[in-house]
Structure formats: structure tokens, C-alpha cells
Length: 302
Image (cartoon, rainbow, N blue to C red; front, side, top):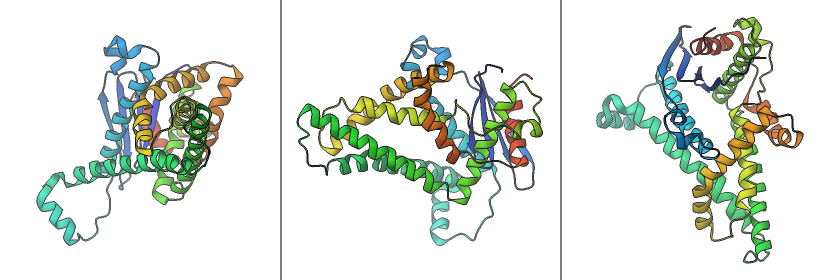
């Protein structure tokens, strides 16, 4: 098996691949053409020594990956040919205001709405529900218990959310491209010729997947947040958001170590995330694997 650091992300009708300083996106248009775009990006960890330090590198990597991934997702949405419906009066009004920038404005607005929704769903709601429990949260033991209950509720909400969105037809397509991304990376790691036939035979579950990392982040947050004194819902939410970079950094070190070591307790932490990929990755068809391979070939030497 080849040791590599190639990573990727599923897009709208496409796949993004990253390797070193190279980023490639491959998107299939409605006419069947695969559009590949290659850009150069030197990671912050390569530019600044501070960002290579343990824990800090994890927080920086999470933020950097989110920014790159969101830009790639928006670019893919612009490249895909979507059947245009007749514009409503409101859409015509917005077009007069924003002109050609309307699509980008709508995309960025949807990101802001999604962030607000995510904060309410995964931070405020679990905290509010945990507050219903009647034990004394002013004591150390009560505060720890309340935080642990909140964390458990957060896990349940997260799993339900992922399961529900997977039922959406468009999201299911993205999850299929996610599976294609993993198929392609497995073929590369196995040192096989990068063909659809070789790639599609591999499993869609990959230990280095962001889904697994995200679940490690959630488990790490439950442990770290349990040491924070219980306060009002808004203060609790603010503290958790402030601590999120630390959580991401610690989780990153656990995640990387679990991927490299055979130590069973560490591997066990990653296992639930691996099982969650049974939802977030779906078996792709050959055309989707072809797109993933096009992105992969653009960032690797062989």
C-alpha cells in the first residue's frame, strides 16, 4: 500500500482532490463533458512554523479545509448546467439589484443561513434540552453530568440530521460522488492503474475521511466540554464556539494517530465515524468514478 496524503471532497456533480500544493476539481456538465480545473495553494502549515505545531495545526487545517471546500462547492454549483425555470417577480427584483453577482450572493447567503442553522441545531438546542434535567448544575458533578447529557443529545441530533438529509435526491448524488472519491483514492493507495474498473471495486469506507474526523471532533467535544462549568444557554454556546478550535486541534491529533497506529483503543474512537460513512458515502456508478479519477489524476504524478 502506498502511503499518501491525498484528500478530497464531493461536490455538486463533481469531486475535488488535494495533494500537496495542488487542488483539482472535476465537474461533469449536463452534456457529459468533464471540466477539470487545477489551482495551486500552499497550505498555511507550510508557510508558517507556528501552524505546524501539534493541536494548532489541527485547528488551522480545519478552518483552511472549510474555506477551500466551500469555494470548490460554490464553483461546482456555477459550472453545472441547471435547468432554468421562469423567474419570479422577487428574483427579477434581486437581479436588478445584484446583476451578474446574484448567483454568488445567493450562495454566500445560503452559507450564512446554514451556519446559523448549524449553531442553533448543534449548540443551542442540545444545551436547551439538557437544561430540562432537574439536577443541581451549580455543583461540579452536576455540571459535568449536564455537559455529558448535552453531548449525547448532540450526537443523537447529528446522526438524525445526517440520516434525514441522506434521503434527499440531490444529497444522495453528492454522497455517491463521495463514494467515488474514496474509490479513486483507494486505487491510488493500492498502486493500481487509475481506471474505473480498478477503482470501483474498492469499498467506499475510508479511515482518513472527513466524516470520521467529524465524529472524533464530536466525541472530543463531549469530553472537553464536560470540564466547562454549566452556565446559561447563550453563555454555554459562546464558550463552546470559542473552544471549538481547541477541540478541532485535539481531535486532529487523535484522528491522525488512530489512522497510523494499530493501538485498538485509538482505532475504536474512529470506528463510529467509519460506520457513519455507510450513510455519507454511497456506491457510485462508473460515470461518477470517472469524474473522481479525473480530479485525482490532475494532482498526482502517476
